[in-house]
Image (tube, rainbow, N blue to C red; front, side):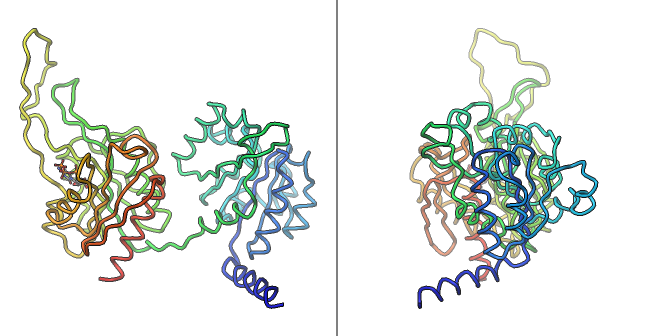
Length: 414
Ligand code: CTP
């Protein structure tokens, strides 16, 4: 009896928390469509308003009536249906969505979205929405492993789409392996996460990213192995949490994160200038860029020709941007990074102190899963109060959120 009323109370308070939030669920044609039915039931139980749209292929597996009955809303299936367009409206659906879920997502749908094709209702609405998109793939294990699909997933992740890993197990096609749609409860959990409150609203974040190019002659430059991924992940996470973000980026091949003011620079000197310009209007600065410490003493205006003898390159030190900010900060929170190959914590503490920082994110760039080019990082966060928080291996996206949690905690104590 107690247990039952506790459970009812739990769902009632959960439903209260999600009340009014609209989830648009796109159902593509795979055998896991039957699990999407359960997903709708759970979302409705949690108080979400659920609008379902289905591809033609999905209707081969489950009828719209099933989804309509469970969601309590008409199901959209056709882009060129006059009745549906006047009753539901595809742009209306895109605008209403607070989270857009695609479950199950087939290789075909993922491929179309990655290619920018919008030739049916689902792909059109997903292209028009500004809501976070959560994609839960489900397919045959070999299809999932196919490099074309994996490249499409990587591309979409880079562009800010959220993916769930398929579960492993027995697949309807008879194979064992990775390809099962994640459990509907787990999908609901992800939806809740994406609706996280905008706790960085009002913050004006200045983020730097990437390497610098310091020209030697018209065809050669000095640089580092920085990919810019950490800074771009910070920019995306900042926007997601409601901050106004200025991203000052060295040369990278990454797509511009949506919703940020992007300033592109090449050299450390240009980066310094852009940072100093934006600094007074900022509430916090996160220096994720691998700023070049040196640049050639003089630029050789013509291409340096090869010769037999060794040559010497004279380098002059560049200004330390973060140290300069540390000396002039005026209420801003300063976050630095420390890329180390030895004595991680000791070196990071020294930088925290010498640059007058509030937080520093230290990572051993030689450790497995850590460093420049990958999508993951293993970091330790240190703050001005002496707290040292070692973190496990996580994606740069997750690390960005941890950094902001720490930043907000420091701010609240100020
Ligand atoms: N940084 C900076 N300007 C520089 C060098 C570094 O603003 N000229 C910033 C980086 O963006 C980073 C922090 O300072 O947030 C530490 O950078 P890192 O390269 O780890 O250390 P350095 O200070 O350059 O010292 P060292 O190279 O000797 O480790």
